Length: 498
Ligand code: ZN
Image (tube, rainbow, N blue to C red):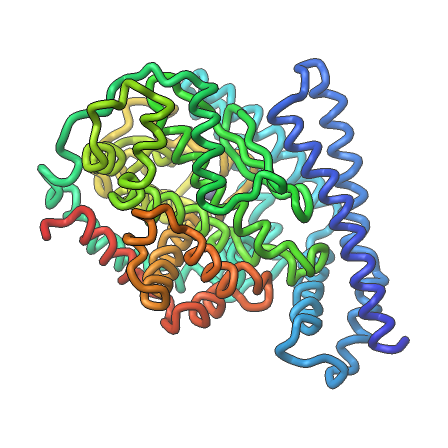
């Protein structure tokens, strides 16, 4: 077969899989927003059927033959062009799909869904021991998966690489060490700054007005209403259904409008990235997100670097006041302080910008110890308490607020947590580079001008899809090797004694 014909077949196969995947995404979205309770059982079957179809398509041996044909004619494709980037992406996806035996993939999917159900019950009952056998099983199956995939130095690397291509435990250690050394003293340094100050009024913030404000901010940041929806769900999330169809969900707290607003901004950042890479190349690797860390960098950048700035509130507070008269006497500095409090706490998802990465470090060190057999599942709750004391200075009084607080491990997602911190590190590097290229960003935010920043991100990050591994993408965008220094500079500037 000619290389060009093989390429066309790969592209057609990939696009059709993407269309089916898009239908699956819509089923998931519906399952978390609209479905009536009695529809869940049928939906689970529907999801399983479509997942099976997609798995068979991903492991279709013809993909191997087509790839063989295009790779046998390397001169036919520009090594730096989108065609070659797609070929690299298809090769990676195919190899990963065929390396894991179907039996193991099915066992993992089943253990993951049982694990999540068990975790929900264990968390509600504050009973780690009820969840422990599920966690042991998931660890065992995940180790088998790592062996099947192969790894650089240790099994954990194989799982991490699925979420963040190219990263290894060893490559993350220096980044976390840098963060830990520099943030350990920030909570103490910030005593009296900028978190000191009155709380915001406790409402009322009617949910329908919050929804309108969430929409207003998403549009101001650049999310087109013609290509998106904002709805409510128990856990906020963002998903791309297809090109021109990004869905964002939030949850409203009647006593605090900032919670849903920051969720909306966070998820809008994800949606802007999805829409930014899914245009012309949708259905091929060039039209896909490169990693979870890069995805998270886009949400954190808008949430923390843009919307938690004082300049943003100078622009946005009058808009919030127009909907919530209770804010009448509040100034931008008060909101800035209220949304930037530093308080070491128990719960990762409630953590401030400074301590957040310490929560991630805790999980990274524990899951790594589990995979290295340096820690056994029954000892995990005690190890969690110890690490929490050491890193955050707080000890969870229950397992629900400690080791059982996150869903990730219950579904078998090991190696996922570090991508949150990588997202923060990338976001800071990108924000710094955008500022150098565009000039005074704060002045733009004060005037409600977010378009230059979005354009810069589209040009330097979004449009590249999966063309480069994350580290290379960030290096090309910023001109620097991966470093936590810009993140630390940002945190010191905002929270340190300065
Ligand atoms: Zn996110």
